Amino acid sequence: MFRIPVFALMIWAQIVTVDTTCDSELKNVLYQDILNMLMKMKGPSSAEPSTCNCKKIVIAFTASLSAAKSIGINEVVKFDKVWTNEGNGYHSNSGVFTAPKTGFYQISATIMSPNGKYFHSYLMKNNKQTVGMYPGQGHHTGAANIVLKLKKGDRVYIRHASNIESIYSDSNHYSMFSGFLISE
Image 1 (tube, rainbow, N blue to C red):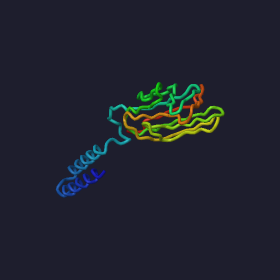
Image 2 (cartoon, helix red, strand yellow):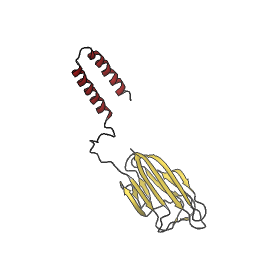
Image 3 (cartoon, rainbow, N blue to C red):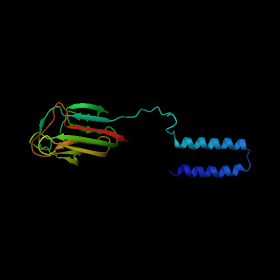
Image 4 (cartoon, rainbow, N blue to C red):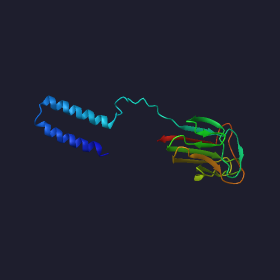
């Protein structure tokens, strides 16, 4: 943070010293060189075209349930319809998202309870409870949205918390689980 201002002060002191002994053409060249060095240290601005040939890594997943299903106590909800799985972090056979990269992730879930029933669940990170979802009785939804710092290999999933209950969904995909990498 202080590198550029200290460097600029050191250069300014040299300019002041040089100012008394240089002609105006040489002084202009010196100013331009200093400006170019400072711009290189700063990096490209949004007004300048990027010279980076790097590919931005996208990690994102969305999965939902295509039908209602009974879920046992402490069982992981396995969302079977995978809409997006960039980075291949979500595994529909286990219902678990495994972070392919370290970074900050936005994780979301919506759970719908069946008519006349409840469905109590948690969004879990590495076997630790984060936030809960408890939709009211009968075709109500509970939702969770959280930003988590995940290390490569951390696991995130939805775990049922009560006795055997059903989670509701149908061809409209009312119950879903998704997430994406915000930044590394």
